[in-house]
Amino acid sequence: MSRTLSEADSKAFLSEFNIPFATEVLVGTADEAVTAANAVGMPVAVKLCGEQISHKTERGLVRLGLSDSNSVHEAATALFAAAQPEDCATGVLVAPMISG
Image (cartoon, rainbow, N blue to C red; front, side, top):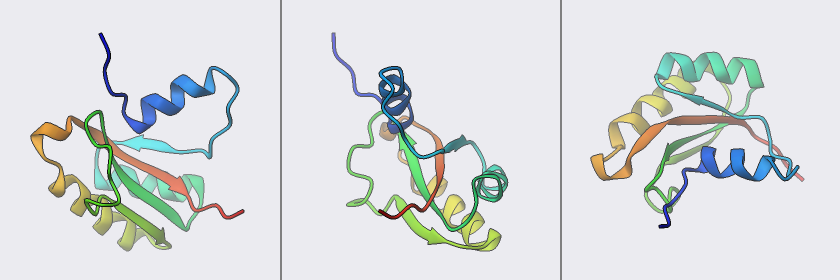
């Protein structure tokens, strides 16, 4: 039996093989997204996370370069509102923007 892993679950699995990833936090509310963004350092990327979401960018479920608490809160609120039941959404991932 096969199943699709969410982005967070995929990264947790791959980290067991010492594959490094940027720090990210899975949160369940817009307020938690702001707290996470402050903890990891802004600017951040905010992405809806769910087992059945494979094309986040195409569906507009990613927000990049958020550099203040208000923009993070607004983005997370919009992403939670955009979640469909079939997405099996587990929350929003908050990660620092990294270049290079």
